[in-house]
Image (cartoon, rainbow, N blue to C red; front, side, top):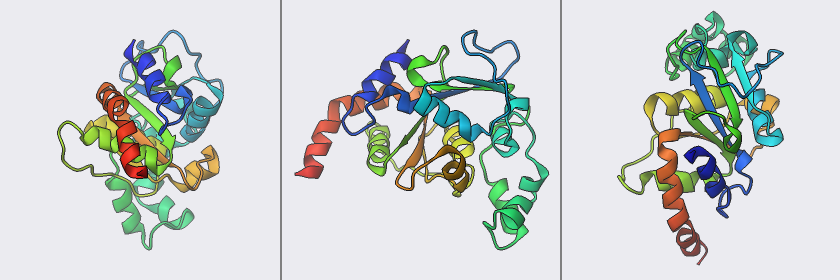
Length: 236
């Protein structure tokens, strides 16, 4: 299947990570009974942020229904549950995280986050791209700004235009890198969030890129044919 092969191709580009496992696929199952037969269901509740480093660093696959998403903010971004009141009202961002000057500002942060319709998703599946047993909705890369730039350049290669990134420095993996590309069908680059540093080990020099799966073949083809020339011009 192409996602397996594309994971290997991209992984060997010198400007991108050498390990195909650096690319994680994420799928949001829209109906019960649609779970893949390969991965085991989670046996403990974890924040969504912990699923990504497990897939990225340890090669682990995670299939989780709503009850196994400890972070309900992340779960709500994926459409597993309703947005929690403390997020919807801005209370969390204002009182606990101190990311805004007023609750009203926090409310606007939450209201402008792209979220999948609550209840439309029954489970999330996160796995290294080359180990996925089903077609992912979104491919996530954690890398450096150059790697993100190359992906954006490849996405612009055929049709041109400009990329517009949707982020608030909050809810990086769940909303920025999953919900946004899933809903909008466009590559989104996230600067991460404090939770992804604290819980998932995101490094200060790293960014998070969410790529709709439908764009992977085109991006891989463009990079395979052009990245060496781009790099030669940049370094020349």
